[in-house]
Length: 546
Image (cartoon, rainbow, N blue to C red; front, side, top):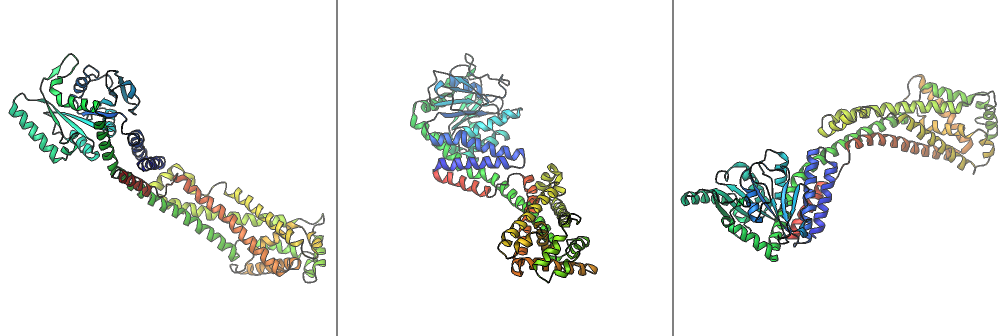
């Protein structure tokens, strides 16, 4: 259960890192995901993996001197400067060399060191080098046991206490060393009493590795120059604790389990800050998506209002089609049967007669596309204006200035969609017409003419026309309707027009959906529900160890 919850949480944090709107927020998520994968999962999988013991302290506190004393030889450079200014030093048995998963750590293999314990000398957590400070804090997160080193002059400083506060939040088991204590016993006791008072007040005493927190007092000058370290007799309690851990598997497992449980217990709090950011962004992104969706829906609705209101096509297009259908003797035969009608229309397709159906169709397409582009431009500008009021929206617009207008491909995409739409109308006409008596004669009129006639029937409504346009629109609608009914019958014409209108809606809807999707793409991946899943996984991991 704990493994599944941790893996799911790490995956969720990866998603957060991939969708975060800033490098800082992405790194925060990636860092916690690495911590889970590199330290919590291995420890949760096997409590017997080597125990990671980290020495933490401020500049000049004596960490490296303590490290050398624990090693019994010079391993780490002591003093204010060290050659590996951005690397920690780890002392490990060769069998445990792969157990510490931090690339910034220099590993010193020591066959004489018992397996099962990795000793790490960290950089100063108050170093002037940012990389050193970051690594020290990373090692605090990775530690199963912390040996905190301070001095008589630094134990109450602000920076060490920020680190101790984080150690308390993490619940990591600890040992403590206070270095350079005065020779006077009374003064030394006064310092120790004050330090313990602070530790108790800061709720640090509870972190003791073996009960009450062990605080080892090291006198000023207690050094062994032979290995550039603290005198081993001065740190006997620390040596005893390390030896106990090296020799006793159960003690190591107990410390490892405490460290794991404390780290996992802290996951909900660590995740909460990220989850709050994600939730706020999800809400903001949902608002931006809604704006883009509503504006493009409104643009499509206004366009379809033009179509249903009969105001889309220019009067000259209507006149051209009306003249075409009423040309010559056609009008005389509109009410005299299909044979004479076909004959009259066929006469229009002799070589000397112009093929006006495609011309009318292209003119109708031109009007429709022009109106669609205008509506899409309006929608894009409206959405972009609204997005400038939001940080995430403004960032997306800065990277995609083309969003202030419709897609340049919109015209060609609509042209292709409308051509396909009319082709489908023609195919339906042919399929239904073949079942009707007299189709062979009617088919000679041409599918282009019949397809254009059905197409125009979708657009021919007189509700939005004014003045002379009413007469043109009404006349065109009547003549067009008679032409279709004479060939297919009234019921079939109604079905054709409805189906054509529905398919036109699909063509236009796809176009405006694509316009909206340009805005969504500019926002990048949107992880809906991520905040909820992060919280749930962190809570599940904690519950698994409770």
